[in-house]
Length: 139
Image 1 (cartoon, rainbow, N blue to C red):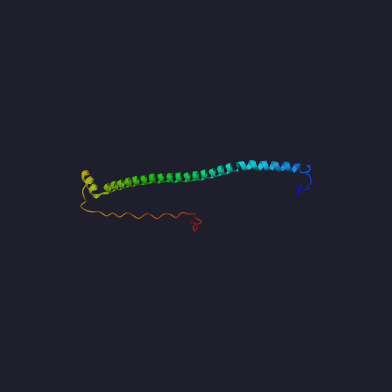
Image 2: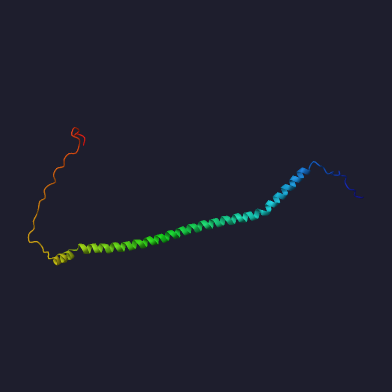
């Protein structure tokens, strides 16, 4: 038996599908163009996010370092002020000491009194009432 080709209809090129075909070609080319740059955009976006995260981290660490330096500077100033305060307290205690005052009084020729005198000071005079004469209740 001899094989014969099956009968089929001959496809005629139709003019009705050319516009849809052109649109499909344009869409396919645009999609191919987008897909070509998709990986590049993803790599760039990932790199940008990583750079942003590292930059924020470095900024925060720089801020912490700055605050640590300020803290150390303030601690050094506090220690210096405590030293000055201690020196001033010693100077005040030395200036108020009875031995120093006795030595200074002796140098001026002063001596302890033989008798002590008590003097009574008069009381303060009463203060006049302040107000308006005919409105004495309003003070």
